[in-house]
Length: 100
Image 1 (cartoon, helix red, strand yellow):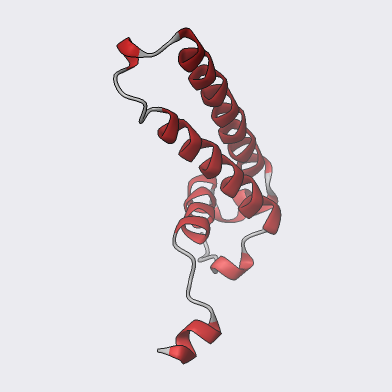
Image 2 (tube, helix red, strand yellow):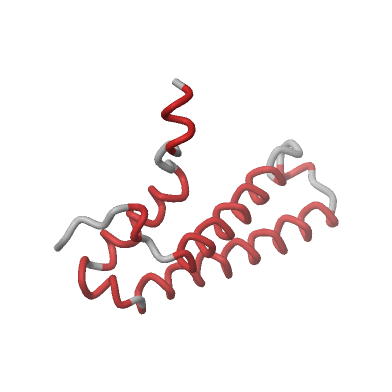
């Protein structure tokens, strides 16, 4: 298994992971409306629709990682972790490093 630099992560995988993370953030935000037992039917419906949107986005990134050629080279789990790290913990840009 080889190390994969975050700059080597395919942009389509980055975009799919960002989309999944964005949908999950919406699920989390919708859960901040108090206790679910006190939600209206509309709130339950909105949450369920958002959950399904996140699930579809999560399935899309998982499928893309599993079928990407880099998964055969470095392993599915390693590629998945590299994609998540690149999205959730991006390396500082050169201009950011110079400003410090």
